Every structure is written in C-alpha cells, then in structure tokens.
Length: 381
Image 1 (spheres, rainbow, N blue to C red):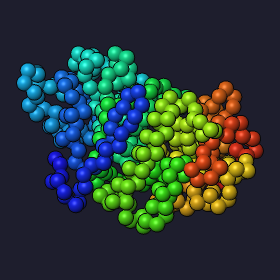
Image 2: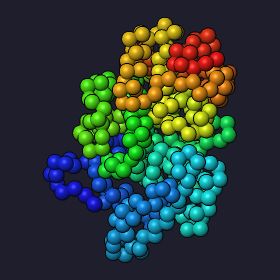
Image 3: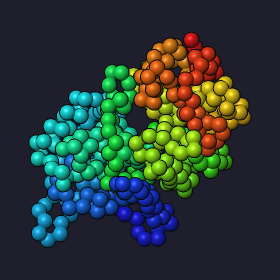
Image 4: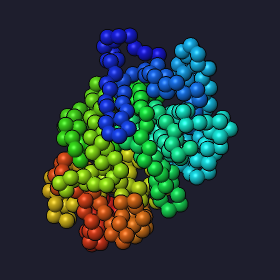
C-alpha cells in the first residue's frame, strides 16, 4: 500500500498544516491508504460515502481500517454508503438516505465519516457529517484533482437545490485530508484537465509561480506522477489554506482583500453556466470560462490591463480548458447570478483582479459592462 522509504518515484508525503480553531493536516503523496487509520483514530464505526462507480476502490481503503485494534478495543465496523455519481449526489433525497444509513448503524458523535470521491461526494459527505448529531468527524480522501485542490480543503459543505448550486450547506472542517496522487492515474484526461481550472485560478488570485509553471511546462508533462503536477497541487492547496485560515467563514479580509471570497474568482458565472447546462459541464471548465469573463469585466471597469486579460485566455487554453461560451443567452445567466451566494440583496458582487495576485470585490457593476464582457467571451444577448 505504500512506497518503500526513499523510493525516488514516490518521494515522502508532504504534510500541509491547516491552523485555526479546528486544525488538521492535508497529506499529499502516493499510496496513502495506510495513513487513514491514524486519522480515524479510536472510532468504532466508520461510514465510507462514495459514488457507485468507485466502490471497487473501497477494499483498498477499508483494509487498513480492519487491522487489529489496540488491546481492549472492539472490532471496528465499516459501512459503505454508495451515492450517485457527480452532482446527482448533491440532493436532499440523497442526503436523507445517508442520514437514514447512519441511523440504522447507530452512528454516534464519536464515530467518523470518510468520503471517497470527487468534489460532489466531498461536498455531500461533508454536509452529512456536519448535520448528523449536529456534527461528527469527517476525513476526506479526494479521488480527483479538482477535489484535492478545492472541495476537500476548507470545510465548505453543501447540496444543490432547484434554485442553484451549493445554496444549502454548512462550514464543517475535516479531521484530515489524504490527497493520494496515485488515484489520479485512473482519472480520464478530461477530468484531470478540468481540475487544472481551479489550479490556474489560484495562480491568478495569489501565486504567480503557478502561472509560470503552467506557461513553461508542456501540457503533455502535466500527468499523474509528474513532479510538476505535484508541485502545482501543493501550491494550489497552500493558496487555499492561507486564505481559509485567515477567513474561514467568508466574513472578509483585511486591507481591502476579499478574504475567502477570493476563492470564488470566476465562480459567479461558472455556477450559472453549470445550471444552464444542467451540470453536464465540468466545474473546472466552467471556472475557466468564468475567470476569463471576470477578467473582461474588470478590464471594462478600468482595473485590469488588456495584457492580463489575454494572459487569462492563454493560461487556461494552454492546459486545454475552454475560454468561450455561447450556450445560453445572457439574461438567463444573469437571473441565476442574482441568486448567487455572493450577491447582497439586489446587488451583484464579483471577485475581480487589479493585477495578478491582487483580488478585490466589484459590487454592482453596470449591466452594460456585464453584457459587454459576456459578448467578449463569445456569448450572446
């Protein structure tokens, strides 16, 4: 299950610490299943929430949990709660089914939920843990690049409603996160590329070195097992950790910085696109389009240079992500954006940039600029 010490193909795991009121570690490396038992601790009941399509991975994950426990402890009971794939899992019906499963197993506050899957599974499983008995521990084992750099870190959990994405949820930080890069080897290329959308986003809002690595690395080298992909993953996670520790509940940063809200760069339009496409578009693809859109919006508002706008297009294109969208008329997307979590009353709010690494909130942009920016990414009104 684990690499031999000193194996050059699989360097020692990197441990990234998340401080704050509920500290935990994010471990990045290869073949990390053996570390799960330490994070689960002395819990006698473990519920593994995973998509139907990933149940074949459960044995590798669960095996170490069933190893003999210390003297005096009963045998650990592991239950698998299979859920639908992707965003179909993030419904009230699936949430209730998970609650019922925990109830049937007699889950108590000393027990642990483990999520195994992509971002949707992490969002759902985190909310299950946050809401059961008003909060039980959760450990995330993300299986996609997107989940590793985004959903698994930071404690945001939630499900979707007919009105929009992630409108119901809670803040509930995990007890630990295992980012096992070996799991990415079975990930379809399109899913890996989609995950790079959040990585490149982190470059624009906080870490220019991410952009340099993307711009100077041939896309064919961004593959599971490559040192450069590992560095990108670790850098993106560090960006999220730094922002989250400073502003866990998205109440705002200091000195004009939007705080945790900066992580939503590109997401206002992205979520509207996802809904318009009935969640058939990948999240990272929608984020790439959304980032280019807000770059165009900031340029029209007079805060971002044309050169940085073009850098957005080039960086996302280089990793294979879309930068244009014409799948819905602007008014349809605008209606969805008006119920986005970042809106305040009738005022739309967008995270924009003044430059690379300099995010801020643009509240109440003119509808003319909003429409012009949409036209600039190939949309129609």
